[in-house]
Amino acid sequence: MKAQIRGNPAMTIIVAYAPTEIAKEKEKDAYSYQQRSAIKSVPLHDFLAILTDANARLGLDKVLHSYNLTTNDNGQRHIDVMDVYQLLAANTLFKKRKGKLWTWQSPHNTFHQLDYIFVRPKWRKSVTNCEAYSAFSSLYSYHRVVTANTPHHSCIPPESYTWDVQACL
Image (cartoon, rainbow, N blue to C red):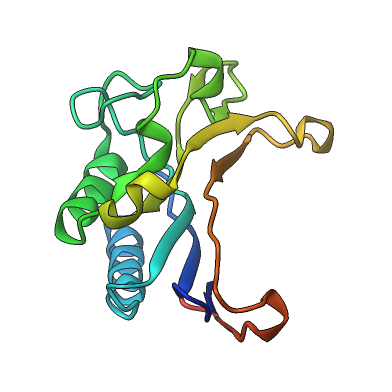
């Protein structure tokens, strides 16, 4: 899903769910194609935030601060997209205790960072914090909510925003 919020600056939010690590290559390739198409359609001057259950482990060999030690296949696919479109994983930019980094608890009681918020480097300083919270633990979800603080101010009053929501991923 993609939401475009017109303001000054304009904001585009893409929400996506990636295939799991054990999915077929064809399914992963289709997701990557749709993801790249959605990113390409966003003007470079927009504040872009991609909120995704990436099912990807970005290891310390690829990003600055991560719960994961190594990068898996889905992680490498996302690293490739990050390189091509010059994106940053906001929740790997801040030094946090381990409890604020993991986003998914497996049924076997292991913890991983699989969910990310990607932003463009142009807006890096607009992201003042990013971390995971156990806000939905009462809903029996294995995932935790990832939040990013972005003091996004607009010169246009909120009631005059135009929303364009599209299904894209």
